[in-house]
Image 1 (cartoon, rainbow, N blue to C red):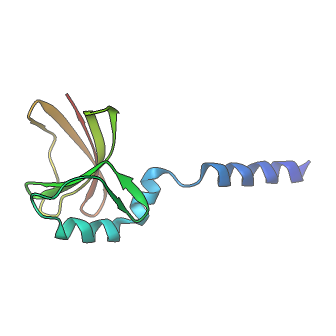
Image 2: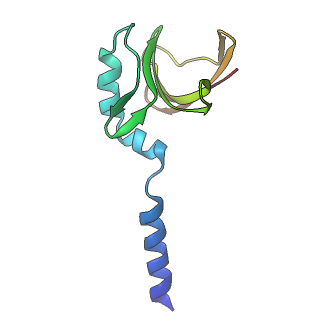
Image 3: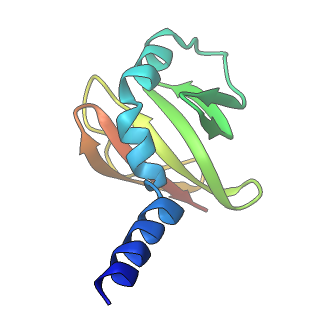
Length: 113
């Protein structure tokens, strides 16, 4: 009886694996190296530390790592590196952005139009 329960627990752990956020948190040093060097005109798809980002770009004093969209081109979400100050909830170009602190200078982020 005990053996099937242990096997089921191990199978669940292997099948589910770490969450996307866990992968990002483990990769923060690599992501930060990109954030520190990305120029104001650089943007586009990137794979960093094995994680695919739809877009990585600098906006003001932040760097955005877009991981998804609710619908193509609408309501993006992902992670933000904001080294100078915590990002504030804001409305920019019709999009309302919200931020949640993760660790250090890193925040999860979503925008809705």
